[in-house]
Every structure is written in C-alpha cells, then in structure tokens.
Length: 321
Image 1 (cartoon, rainbow, N blue to C red):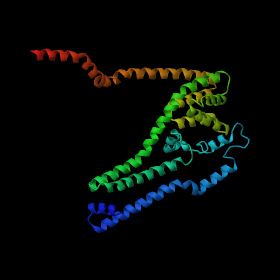
Image 2: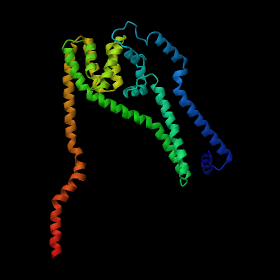
Image 3: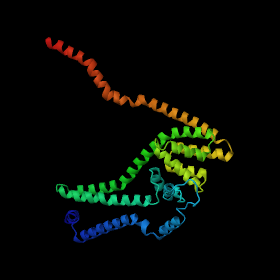
Image 4: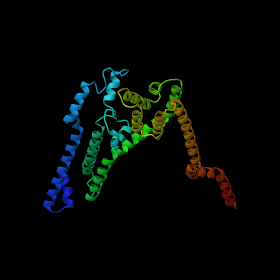
C-alpha cells in the first residue's frame, strides 16, 4: 500500500488528486473482484436458473422416462449439453467454447470471470514484483501494469484459440476414417442413426473426440431433435467445413428423397479428391518453403565441405611462396 502511494506521489504532486486517484483505484479493484466472484456464483443464486434446474430434475433432465437406449451416464451428459439450450448458436463466445469442447451451461460465465480475474491478478503480480526492483522508474512500472492488464485480457482468448485448433486438428484427422466407415455401414443396410451409433462405437478408442460428437448427435435425436438439426449442431460445435459440407449433402438427400448411401458415396469421393488436392498443394509449397533452410543451413555446410579443402590448398601454396 505504501509503495502504491509512493508511486502515485511520484507522478502526481497535488494531494487532492492523489487521494482521488487512490480512491478510484481502490473502487475499481473492489468492483472487479465483486464482478469476478459474481460471475462465478451466478448459477447458484439465480432464481430462474434454480427453477429450470428443479424442473429438469423433476423430468429426469428433460428426457422422457421411457426413452430407450439412454443410460444414466448419457442422460447426465445430455443434461449438461447445449442441446437443451435454445439459441446457443447465436452467441459467438458460446460457439467458440463449444468448438474447444466446453459445452456446459456455465462456460460463458466462467470464461468471462476468468478473463476478469486474470486482468486483475496479472497487474497485482506486477505491482507486487516491482517492489523488489527499486531501480525501476514510475513510467516503467506503469508501462508494465498496462502490459500486464492487456495480457490478462487477451491470454484466455489465446489459450481458447489454441484449444480450438488442437480439437479441430483431432477431428479433422478422424473424419476421413469415420466417413469411410459410415459409407460402409449405410451401404450394408443400416439406417443413418444406427450407422452413426456404430461408427461412434468403433472409433471410441482411436478417435474419442469425434466419437463423443457422434454420440451427442444420437442423444439429441433420441430426445426429439430433428436429425438434420442435430447434425447441424454438431457442425456448429466442431466448426469444420468438412462436417458442414456432409450435413448439407445429407440435408439435400433427405429433402429430395435420394439415396443416403449414394449421397455419402459421392461425398466420400469428393472428399478424397479434396484431400488429394490439398496434399498436392502442400507438395507444391515444399520447394518454396525449402529455400530458406537450404540457403541458411544446408548451403553453408555444403560450401564449407566442398570448397574448404581447395581454399586451404590455395592458401598453403601461396604461403610456401
């Protein structure tokens, strides 16, 4: 506290302005802490949320009692999923959190509370650590505080983007195998829902992320959500264009009454062509990407090995003369 007063006193000389700045900083700190903890406990004190939770418990989580093929674990998973929340696709933050794999109802409140706490915690750490470096000027400390505030606000979003990229990479790697298996299951005579269930069971060990998404589609379908709408929700949760294209193809197939197996076969062939074109594109970029490693790593070593002995021989000849 004394250090903070000295820091403010080194910048502002007027006693009244110093008191005003100190009161303002204290009020902002208390306000930030109250808002952060308020976001965290909002789900516990909100009467509307408590009433909805009570209704869900009375109706077994919004799932009919006689709904077949739903275990207790699946019912609890569906109870905390986004399928029971209407309009979640309109929130960009909720969609980003769903893309990272966070599908519970309180994820948005937790995310904003985490950002607010990080924005308060990082400057507090900088303020505490600056006491051990008395050679720092007040301008440097203020710059560090502003930088810590910016880092605290941006770091949760950066971490969330990394989690989204990691999850989408896993889904993108699993999608070709799942698509080929889905084509085989549908052409063997299984319905689309049964084929999705079979594919989810088969890839549960090798690709658990995509298997969980397929299980979620089946759970939504069993409780009354339209099949295409459930698959659109999966495309929104994953954020992949490949899955969105598959859903669009299945939607057109069901709307015009064409064969689902033929649609999946055509889309699988188009997807293979797309993967081949992407591989050819990556191969074409290799020559350009190899210029800098060859220039700065390989070529100097090659020049030293091939030309070095000749240069040493020339220098030895000139040295004897």
